[in-house]
Amino acid sequence: MRRQIVRIEGSIHSRGYESQRHLEFGPDIPRAEPLKTPNVFLASMAKAIHEVLAGVRSVDQLSRVVSEQVYELLRSRAAAGAQARLKAGRKPLIQPTDVLKVRYQSPAEDVIESVVLLSNRQRAKAVTIRLESQNGSWRATNIGFL
Image (tube, rainbow, N blue to C red; front, side, top):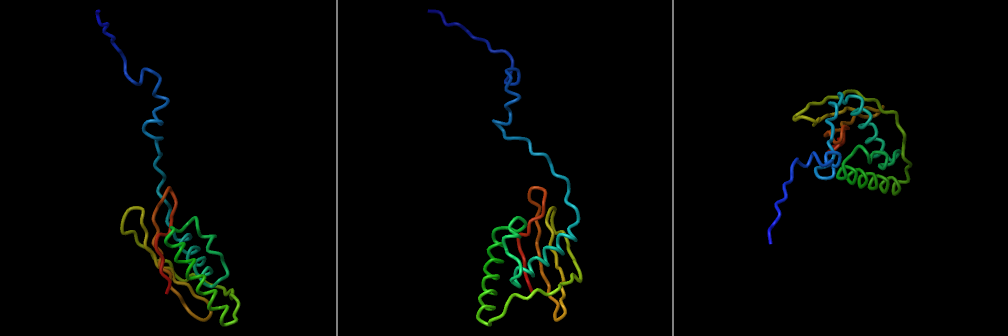
């Protein structure tokens, strides 16, 4: 019995597999545009964090722009503040808060570390926020509240 030799000519691309390339390697992810300077985002984020800790805003409203670690930290601090207010018989107080200064630096590409100074009529507070770029938007990965 004689064995028949089969010759295959062409390549994988000539068989119509080019349109199915994403099945093998995954889709091509386009490079996002560089993110804009985050002054306004930092100011609004600091005010929102202040409102969460004061008990007038739900931490769930920040879930899209903070990491899971920051979300859990804010949730636990907001719950502790709510328990303290309940024991003291106080209600959450809405105070007008102004942003005095926003300072930031970029220690690495797509990373911003910042300090935002807030002030209400009685006292000034500082919020430190570390932002990292994820999927074309900023996400807070670490915060501090003084």
